[in-house]
Length: 302
Image (tube, rainbow, N blue to C red; front, side):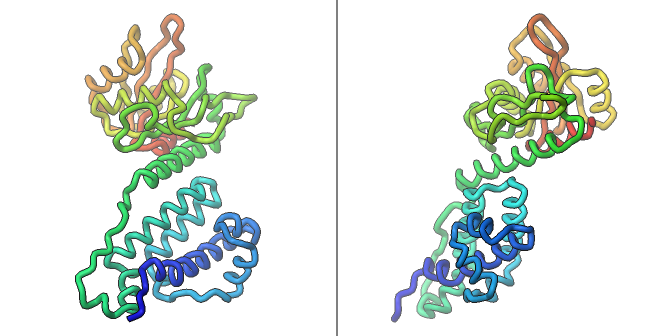
């Protein structure tokens, strides 16, 4: 018997096919050969081989809907910047593990080693919902929400004096380190929203604390955006059917948000606001299922 590991099927069959498909997807999206090579972490000569069909591919892997779907999602994400190389790797790794678990790769493995069909073999190796994948998904989600706002004409006019931010937390967030946002805050510079840095976890004490307070009060939300207070904005939110909840002044904002949300029990997406008090700028907080949803609600105001 020739011993053949399932990892060899991945290396010899899946990876050449997947990289060839992704290289073609990226070329179709306007990537140069050099950019494709950088995205895939391979040499330009390897990309040339993919382009000329000089790399053997597996027809069954190419025809799999899940593989095709992932190639399209990663291609789109890499082209827009929503997906990093780390997230692309994690997503591909997750698919590989799923296909190993009694699925396509397991079938190809059994065909390469018929002896395996005669025994009861478990192929469950990795957790598809691992922490690394989840954190990368949240970072990507915040980037999408951020792009929704910064691409919107007039958004800079909604930024309060203290600045705006876009945030989303992990599913089981316990503290601000589990919330991704923009470091510093978005500010209005000559009519344009300026982003000071890349999205990170643990960089927004204020909006993160407000989001966590709303969740602790029972709100089914993971995303938030803060904008300037304006009665016309509140009216527009209400007319669009979004619950609008007033926060009592005189207490720390996260505590006030917690009490207001617990009392009103609004359905997402919704907004909370507080009016001016000494030393505190009035603000509207928009909450959604995720950062893109909160950003879409804000964009509707423009």
